[in-house]
Image (cartoon, rainbow, N blue to C red; front, side, top):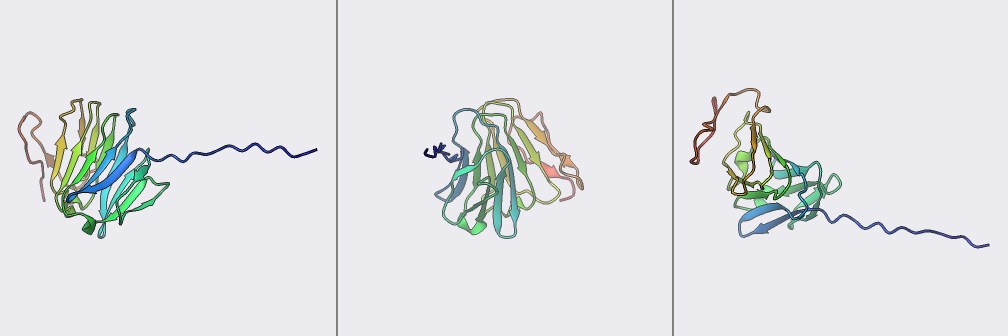
Length: 170
């Protein structure tokens, strides 16, 4: 009598997030076409930019970047790029949290939301720098400053033109 083994192939998930440096900009994009709900947290720790998605993994990253946390966290030196950080979450109801020290990003942060309702969470207790929300894709979105606990935030939500949102004591 012989031994029968059943083997199951496990195909690794290549991740739905792609990080790349094009020109001077670091771009993080959701490349899945099935409306994944991203939950990204963006922060600076020391001399590194740290981007974590609670739901999705990174499939590709630029040279100098390091993946951890099951490929859901990208850590990359700020010196790796000299332009903007561009985050394109595409489809899905995404949540993007901007935490401390983003003012250290060389060219600021641009977030491109998709047609679904996205939530943008900001911790403005320390300077966030320049953040641009590109909502050309439409959708009804939420600006959430509940992480900000030590300062007030002022925004004119009735203004159609580009505006600067200020924390009241920075």
